[in-house]
Length: 255
Image (cartoon, rainbow, N blue to C red; front, top):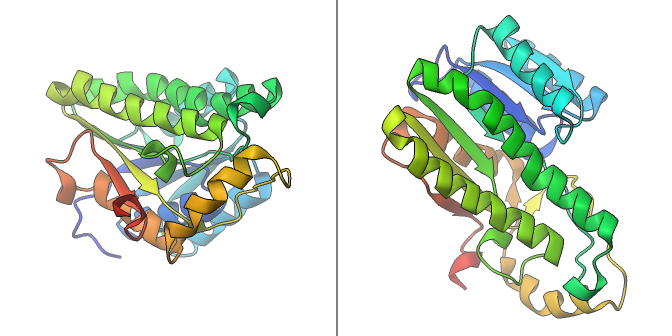
């Protein structure tokens, strides 16, 4: 166990922790001595993440459900209070891709689902957790934004708008609550080796235009590399970092 980050003993909620960046973050938080609440829509993934964490001797629990539904948000908070005794860190990581469509081609269902999962759901959970952080007088919230938060050439319209919204939410929260001891930051991953699903219509305008830009992303990151940035932002090592959108993209944002 590594306890140099000041995270030991803290209670952490990680969404989308059944796979990819979320699972890697949950495991790394556990390695720092935290107690972890795993949240995922996939029951098998959530169970495996809890098993992996408990195998290290750390405390882990799970909630399975769709965070775009208020009942799941309520269950997450209730479980954190009942099983962990509170919340110190919230990691809003869960998200989905779009189909890379340009605006004229975005279906209503795609727009509504991507915005609901990627932006509304983390807002709902943040709003529900905030009162508990405010009572404690401290806390850290970390979002998973995207390279698409930084540029219009990294993803389709719906996904880009949703992640731009996450960047705005991060900054608004940081300003509103910094005097109450709460820090809010985000990572902006570039290309990353995860199992997130991406479907594209061949020959459509979005993929055709974006293809000329996405070749600049360089070497993809591992989920563990993205998770390390999340854990850093949540830790005492980042105690004066607030409102930052941290690119973790092998320099893609600099190209």
